[in-house]
Image (cartoon, rainbow, N blue to C red; front, top):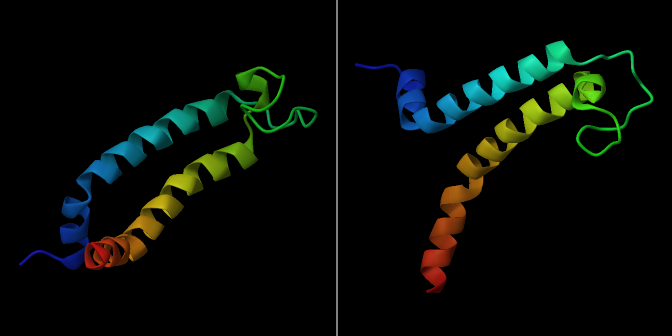
Length: 88
């Protein structure tokens, strides 16, 4: 008998693979970034180069957004599908 966590991971394998690749890319960007360069704005919406503008704030935001999207989709995705099915 498989554990509940392992079952959930197998059901969402596509997201785990996507998120690991996403994490690897952003770790590289974070390690190449210069956090002490505060005069740059939020990457990619600034005039600085990527390597000098990518700091902890960008790292945190870009790693949190996919998790929030996935959690919201899992929490209310089925409810939306049911309500759309009932209306048709």
